[in-house]
Amino acid sequence: MDTREQAIYNEVTAFDDPLDRYGVIIEFGEELPPMDQAAKTEDNIVKGCQSTVWLDVQCRAQRIFLQADSNTAITKGIIAMLVRVLDGLSPAEVYQHPLSFIEAIGLHEHLSSQRSNGLHSMIQTLRKKAESYL
Image 1: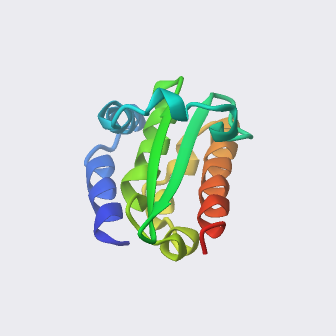
Image 2: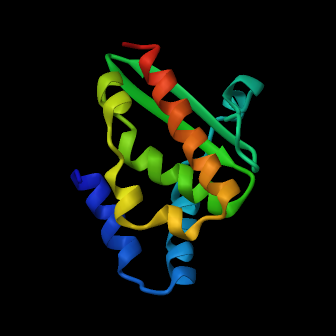
């Protein structure tokens, strides 16, 4: 895990109780910078999520810059973790990033199948958009 992932891992695994871990993830969403309303377009909606998730991916100076939001607290926290790990990396780094923290914190174990599918859709969308800048 890289240092960004390690920071997330440390914050989440400081708690054993799954509800406390959810609380940390929700806090990540609360800390997410507000998304520009102009970026909340149909094109930026992540398909395959039960909740509405907006993800704007821009590339400037060979770096990926992310803006994201969601209409639910837990989903916003999940996309916030991805933003924390991937924002500012190169397109190749975003595309190839293993996102090891997801497995390390046992995120899939504590998500409903619909939210787990939504997480997969978020990751696939990020990788596809990063790939378009390669």
